[in-house]
Length: 227
Image 1 (cartoon, rainbow, N blue to C red):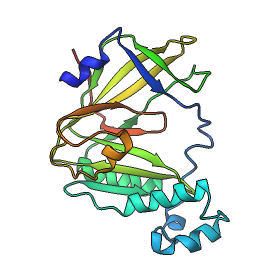
Image 2 (cartoon, rainbow, N blue to C red):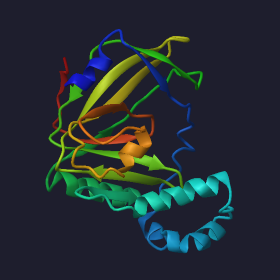
Image 3 (tube, rainbow, N blue to C red):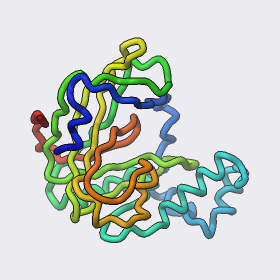
Image 4 (cartoon, rainbow, N blue to C red):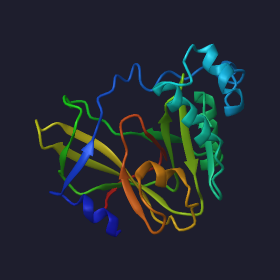
């Protein structure tokens, strides 16, 4: 895969890994019974903003409204959910993998990072593929409580890799997860992934996941060298 050439050992990559207190971010999921009774739509956004005492015309309010708009977008040919509870996220993953398939998630970890800034990270060794028949990426979206955007598309291949990185400043190490989408030609030009990454439709691409992003994989996976 040509896109993985940019992750060869010794390559320097400019990346920003924010420091996050994971006890506060992402915020906690609501219990499913409570999440079901709180409106989650742009039509009822005003009532929800009032409920949580957040001004709609504020940086936080605009980010929350953006989450609702994105979650209401339809994505042709792709299964997706904005999970507002752990039960709904797990249910979506179960459906994506099929009955009787065990699963778990992997995520980027950077326990030694001390400075949140854009800096160069050196790839310490070749990416290692995480073997899984299917994967389901989930991304935390800003909202009053935990909301994860999860997606699964059977029409284009997606692979996940583990990648070890070291920061140029201070030597902070990161155990990163890289996800590669092998074919984006069938995706809508307005697909969220193009907006999030600032790229154009067509071909394949890889991107480094941040801490907090989850990649659900089948439990029978076996890491293998990517190159």
